[in-house]
Image 1 (cartoon, one colour):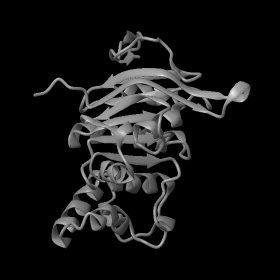
Image 2: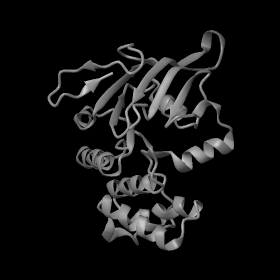
Image 3: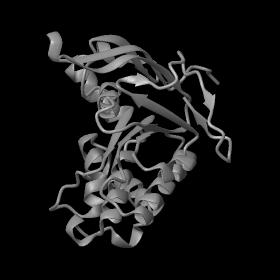
Image 4: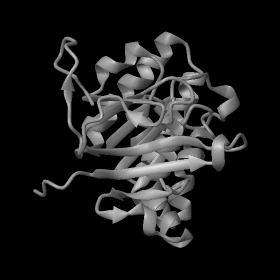
Length: 245
């Protein structure tokens, strides 16, 4: 088995604007994520969390630095390469769910597989498996408007897993949910990491969610808070031996 990290971020800078009014959203960000782990990304609003996630997933480009996902340098890809990356290796879960209102839960989950032209029988089996995984096997035919917020987020997670990505990026996935529902969604993500072998990077404001992560990375004003390069870690002293980077 390779010791290569699933995600390797090296010296990433991202600036918006120029001159005295320039905003430095990311400043020399460097860290690794091991395969099959769940990492929480924390930081106040405006700290650079979403910019970092967008750069990692190829939705934005850094001004300098490199991002390698499963050995692929995201920063060098053209639009076709980025589309292929998001079809094959990287999936997103957003706090706004992003489901198609006129489609059922099963149809929403199966949409990426239709785009990938997976045979219908195989697609149906995969959708059924994923809805069962997220606890919604009995809601396959319901549309998003007929589901609760927590159920919609579970459908969004199932859809993100449809094409068996290597990296799952979740940007404040519990931001629109109450505390109890949010915790259940985070617990689901924890279970997905273990059952599907996916690597998850989850941004959150909620400190109660952190105990479910293998690792916590904090970002302040575009910098990792501890400043340690190459994924250096600090023990945070919480029960369970979780780590802060």
